[in-house]
Image 1 (cartoon, helix red, strand yellow):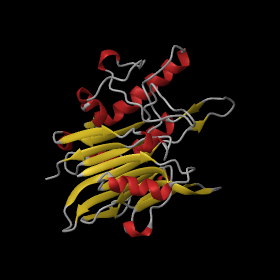
Image 2 (cartoon, one colour):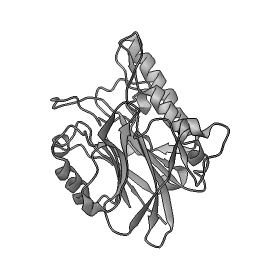
Image 3 (cartoon, one colour):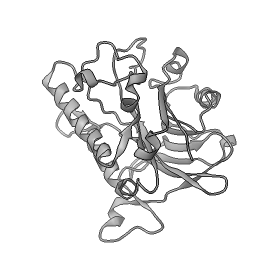
Image 4 (cartoon, one colour):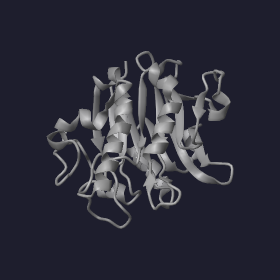
Length: 278
């Protein structure tokens, strides 16, 4: 089974081409961020539009089945405030940031659960009175929302992926190194739930990223998944990740699709994992 995670950059204009590209690559299930809803012929996706009490957008996060034979069952969401001193009904999951995270159970056509897919987009958050922006605060809140899913990951496999806007890469400045340390702490939360970082797990299958400066030293596994607008080359910029339950990692390969055709479609490139599902 082929699974891709991709920030599709909602501001780009080639959305139909992007969905066709995923199909051409043989992707079965896509976990997308900054995406518009897919074309109707893909069936019913699990798609959540980013919004709040004052504004909403036409784009958001989603889980989309691109090929027949796979069924998506959305996990209901409930406002975080409604979870105080009560257990959500019908397997509902708290939702502290509407539209930033889409959750779907991925099943076979005969209703057998393969895994729970989580498409996560950690948006930047500004700090009042400063020029500072952080994504780790939103990431931590969303991961807390997912506690019920992550705690049962040994029974129901999980694929959690997306644009985390986090990196343990840094430059020589103190603020950059602090941001990298904050990112390491955020990613460690997923590892504490026994999830495996697919890119790190398969680092021996690719050449090291030239010139990468990060906290990991010789254990560096970074790849370039993000380029700023108009940039034609990039020596770093990993903001996108894919994590899976331990049981899935034993039969998994991971590829970062960073060809020139992809960079024409978005400022991020897809991370693709192939899993031998039982």
